[in-house]
Image 1 (cartoon, rainbow, N blue to C red):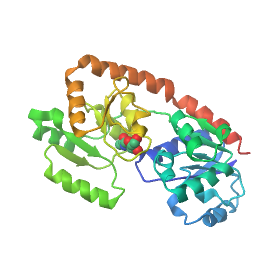
Image 2: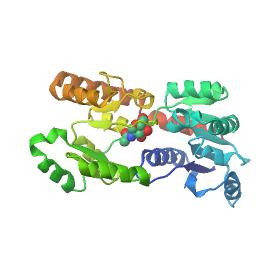
Image 3: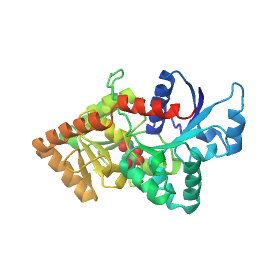
Image 4: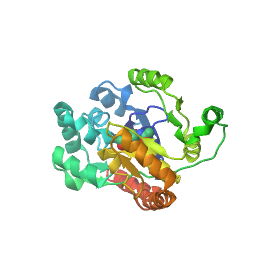
Amino acid sequence: MKLLFLACLNPKTGNHTTAERIRSYIESAGHTCELRDAREFQSPADVVNLVSEHPKFEAALAIHLFKAGRLLMDIEIPFGVIFGGTDINEDVKVEQKRVVMEQVLLKARFAVAFTDKLKEEAELFLVSQSSKIYVQPQGIQTDVTEKFCWTEFLRSSEWHCENLLNVLVIIGPKIDPVLSAEVETVVKRTAGVFLAQERCQQELHAAMKRCFAVVNSSVSEGMSAAILEAIDLGVPVLARNIPGNAAVVQHEVTGLLYSSPQEFVHQSQRLLSDHELRERVVRNGKLYVEERHGVKQERETYQRLVDTLH
Ligand SMILES: *[C@@H]1O[C@H](CO)[C@@H](O)[C@H](O)[C@H]1NC(C)=O
């Protein structure tokens, strides 16, 4: 079967990694799967044109009901969708977007939610399509082959050698130019906080593994693969207590949650001084990721679902 797969493909982002992983499952089942960036298309009509090219596409898949799924609304071939974290945590709050997502869900053959909670919320906010929505947590695979030296990281640690544990490195691609400029300004005035460019996943994992903890201070909702990867690497996670993070981090069990800057410092200090706590969250986290986020199960789910698109 020839499949079209639409997702937002900013390089070196969690979305891109998830999309590539799912594509590899589909191809390993013997299908052809063409992964395309949703931003290449202006309207559903563009996608109609694409799928009728020869040889014709026979089915489609999209990550994000709003950002990508809506582009599939006019095609005649069957499709499935995967909820993006922001669909249910953010986009659903805008009525016009919510209505579009509802239409996408009605037309899709199946939908995948990463957590039970996302599925429950989808049923609450969108038209109820319970039997269509499958829960499949993201599969997590970490790899720490280190190929490059970390000069900038080492240098920043040298600068702060007396207070090494207080260094915060912010790492990732600049996607929103306004936000990036703001971050740069703040970082320049803040001792001990550094910005680093995005890396390929292997290098990022190597960097994470050298950290005392991985912090997620996001105020905007989504679903963090980075948190799960850190947990899998045996690095404790400190995450802001928002529903997206609380869905993967259970306070004092698989990581620590905080709600204010004061609490952030407090929880970090506990993690530093309480070795038993640190070991416990690392151990529990590892088990949780193995049990709930295995790639074998994820592969089987997607291969089975894609077969329903015939
Ligand atoms: C941080 O958490 C938010 C919410 O769960 C998520 O959308 C984002 O991708 C996360 N970022 C990182 C780097 O973990």
